[in-house]
Image (cartoon, rainbow, N blue to C red; front, side, top):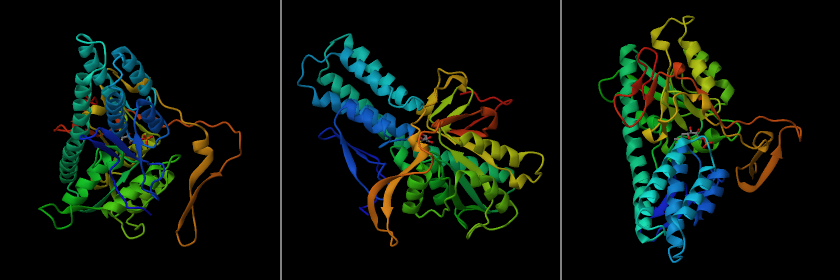
Length: 402
Ligand code: MRU
């Protein structure tokens, strides 16, 4: 195994080069690939060498910067040509709004330049570079603030419920450093909670004990990436399949320990690819059913306040789509059927040595498959939307106002 890292995106301000960690090779191999053009970025985003809503937006913006830089000697390249390439880049993954938000901002900059000069020049380059660097740096600092806001919300919630003792958190997909500029969103809150809500630290008589990342079929971002990040950070966790959540919660509520922890699940924290104005949130397929599960455990069947589970969406404001009133018209990306009917990964020998990558079949060839990458959780099932702003968004008369 090569040197482990959590740095998904490396841009050199000095020589304007961009490298991304190839997430298709994780967790077994650390390998960076160079992105030299908008086409390179399109392919890397589409094939999911880089994924996660904030990360693809940052890579998209940096790829435009690099593409302009490498073509500056072409004095005939027009802003209109560049805009066309940017529109093409936007089609790489349609659901995550961060990419289109960033590309729209860049197009706005380009339109302003167009008033002065219709050719892509050094001033255009400087403007796009400044925007991209700001997006990258802003995402990192927002994620730390978002993490702190998550800790505050969790602390207030547990205090209101007079909860005492250890608690656990369930999360889905990968929303960590690898999906962002660093720290992460939902996984960022888990990182912040792990460092701030420790047993015996501060005046609280509750503390974070365990995380349960879901495998996240069919692409397994939870098993491959979130488990890699949690292990890297030494945050206690146990990997489970997507269909084990109800069983997990129910067992822990009955004080039956799972492996070495019996801390009840108090929070399900997920990321988002697009949060619309009424709070409906698109995220990795399977997120909606997690919200429904939390709702079941919060229903009148179970009366104990201390066993209530809060369902939290964690996303920076760059993931908010202020143009859409509800989640009804969010375009859900459909991925190829082979992602469901096959498994891809390196062969491991009995000692855990990593061999060549292979594809194995797990379903009859040629069958009909439905493979949506995301679903939309209705706002009614969401308790809080945590962003870098405080207070966190909560429902007022059953409605979010974003
Ligand atoms: O298909 P992916 O891996 O790009 O899906 C990622 C997610 O659904 C994340 O939860 C979301 O992008 C937020 S990442 C901070």
